[in-house]
Figure 1: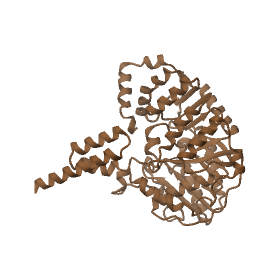
Figure 2 (figure 1 turned 45 degrees about the vertical axis):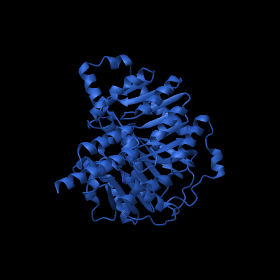
Figure 3 (figure 1 turned 180 degrees about the vertical axis):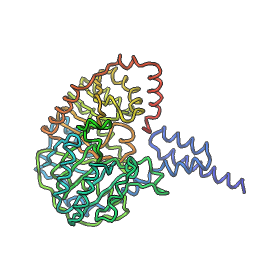
Figure 4 (figure 1 turned 120 degrees about the vertical axis):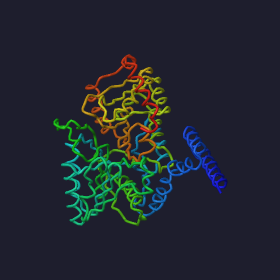
Length: 472
């Protein structure tokens, strides 16, 4: 009996190792799982099937397919010939358009207006105003929604809208909800607000604790949209100097056809979470509100491609004069490091703004261990003074902006469900470039000498943290 059990475990382990060998694209991941399967017969194979196999992609693809031809997107989502004539035609922009057309699922659409909103002081009143004016629907997704002073204002506004007969749906990440001891879901009990938690910690869902919905989306009446990097919590009120945890951030108010794409991204997440099939609904097409060409980009382990990673590398390759990166967490892959260095060596001025004070010290330490590789090739790196800066921007040649929830780290680009918007609009990009330049003027540029001056203990600490960069 024991012999039969051992033989079964070994067969199971060999079959699992073979599956990893055939299906894992990253050789390091494949080798790691093969060793795990064979070193711990049975247990290693079980861990592989629980943690190493992506079941999210299959279920999400089903949801995506349900929506095709069912008017969650407008029936004719292809850009018209008139709109195509308005698309930017420079070599930088055209290369990026071709790349995004190939690796994303949504079209580039003309007629949008992008309004940057700085910190909670500008963002929250604009969002609450849109919620208050809603006539048909409010779809709201956030990684963190804390029922503090600001959070309670959103709770009250959403409940009031639902009482008016508005279709109000709130989607919160189950892990992000744990940032607060008080759970916002309790505020919506016995109300008309529809609430759902993304990948809750059930017996099965707990195996997906490493896959989080990091998107921040608010869509009102399929007409007004908000997205960016800002959660719902008091610490985004940056003017409150009495709060030692205050955070500087940027969010965006979107108007125009791109709002359909925000809505579609929310609906995919909603139906995946609640387990419902998508039903037909004829949405009113948003009217043109400006001149920006935009595209919503959903990224995550459910997508066929690592599209944000490819777009980032492609943008660096297309840059002719300037690359401006602002991100709170910066742990680039080897391919991204090579792309940044290649751009700098071609004569492109590459500027990277990072926070001097991070809310995740071990991530900042891992970043420090990588910066010398960029400084050697004349990339300009700046540390922004406290408070912690959570803003995320990629600006290329004063022509292109990538905005949204994703950071430049393995978690955002491989594990998290993220939502970004690419923007082709000289006015919007010019405004964001001015914001970047103002932030750079207040920052401190670091040099290769600064990195070399680190003590041995700090260099050992930073290099040790770098070992865990695939998981940070």
